[in-house]
Image (cartoon, rainbow, N blue to C red; front, side):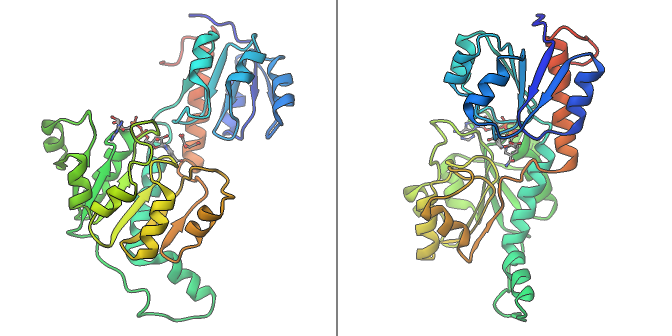
Length: 317
Ligand code: NAD
Ligand code: MLT
């Protein structure tokens, strides 16, 4: 396939390697961030392709307003900010870089697990406020505890490997995981009900789709062990945030660590209350925000677009 891409618009902050690689192959690049929809459309009309991260929403009306657009490159994993149906119907190729930021998302997840177990965030905050609260912030060992991993793809597997190494038992649920594969990887093969029943801590690593929306909800939370900890570095909406807040307030959920939200940036009262809860650790969608991951996905997306755009065959697709 040769889509003849001569000019690219970069609409979100991506690593500098992206622009550099396009320019090295003679592709014109324009970079402007945070444009309102009408200005974004006006820019896209002048370009063959666009590179986005997650801030720019490539909606159906944008795709339909820009018949010249040939390609959307997503410097990251999830493509939920791009209307894939509209892209397919209008012959627009959508590319992403699955895997380019998996290690970073995994490492943040592991950090969240440690932060929850040892109260690192509130204890650190208390020191800054001049307090010395040794009793209040006593934690628990991860060693011997059970981690439920929901979604055993790239990131779920990386998390499991690291948490096994620190002595946790891991029970994994994924519709595509086989018993043999689970055994080979040293994890317990579970059904989703086993996750709720057995886990001291549950971490989610699925895409957001109808089957995973509100997977952790009022009913499934009630089936979890009292004191269960919840980690979501995947997508907002997999965990029902109102149900999580209610469970934290009722003392059933022991704590939660959240990097992603159903609304980003958050403005709703219940989300603000959730992130301010004393037993919640929250970060503003930082899973992929490392220098290494950003450079990797920036270069990978440019490579793919250059190959499909007919500029080189040097990079593997
Ligand atoms: P992946 O495709 O490698 O793995 C996802 C797994 O979920 C697959 O194995 C799939 O079989 C499984 N799955 C699908 N439906 C399921 C269901 N109903 N129940 C349980 N499992 C189900 O994806 P990945 O690269 O590991 O990414 C996982 C998630 O993390 C995605 O939502 C991605 O967008 C997100 N992510 C977030 C950040 C961040 O910055 N916070 C960074 C990278 C990725
Ligand atoms: C992804 O899906 O790649 C992550 O959410 C991170 C990002 O948006 O950059």
